[in-house]
Image (tube, rainbow, N blue to C red; front, side, top):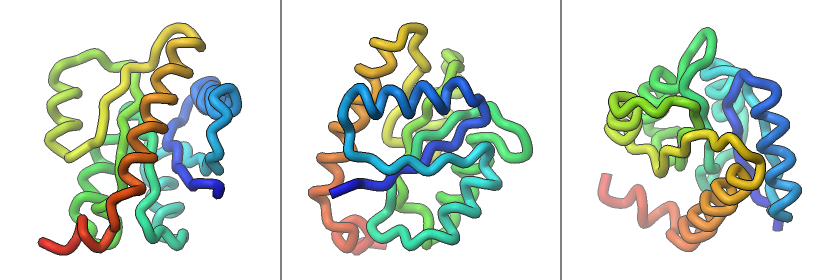
Length: 143
């Protein structure tokens, strides 16, 4: 069964790198791309996203950056359960801490080589698969 995922990144080279890594890893993922946080929110609000879909999120984008995007979805009861992995070039500790403070599932610094990028995406795919085993109703039941 094809799984859905959302990539929010304004860099067309990084978008194509993610697509190539998905193909290389033979991941059965249908990737939707948004070029900033505003567009990402539009995609999520239009989509039927039950269960929540995983999101790969860049931090530095125009209009609405990754942190602003995270603030909006974590405050929205209909969007807060989406699993977000930050995919960024930022190695700054302050960015890492800000991201985890917003309940991200992971923080991946964009690797310099394609093979390392494929390894990172394969690790994310493993986490997606594990989280698919947890019923959405169980995750949101205590709120």
